[in-house]
Image (cartoon, rainbow, N blue to C red; front, side, top):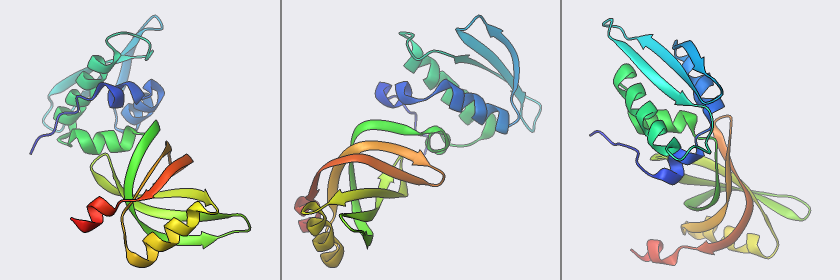
Length: 180
C-alpha cells in the first residue's frame, strides 16, 4: 500500500536542515544552492536512474508544504521506501499534539513520576517519555495497573530512538478506547 503524506501541518513541521542531513546520509549530492531559498540535490539509484530534489531552505515560503511533499515523493521513488518510513526518520518535533498510548513503565522521583508510553507516531509504535506531577501521576498508576489507554497533550520532541512529550497536560484515561 502506498501512503502519500499530504497533511500541511506535518509537512510544515519538517526542518530543512534535518532533510539536508538525511540526504547526505543517503548519498545524495548537493549540486547547487539558489540563493538562500532552495538547494538542488541529485542521486542515482541502483538501476542508474537519476533523481533530483528541490529542497526549500525556509519554511516561511507559502508553498513549503507542497515542496516538502514533492521531496518525500522523490525520496520514496528513489529509495523504494515508504513516505511514512522516511517521515519517521525526519520527524523531530511537533507542538501541542495529542498522544494516545499505553503506560508501560513508571519511575517515581521525589516530586514527579517519569512515565513511559507506547503510542503511535507517524504510523509506528514508539516509546514516549513524559514527566507527571502529583496528583496526575495517580492516573498514570491506575492506567498502568489496569492497562487502560491514556490520552495526553504536549510538545513532542524526538531524541535518539525515543520521543519526549514536554509540557504534558490534559492527561486522562481513554475509557472510550478501553471499552471498545
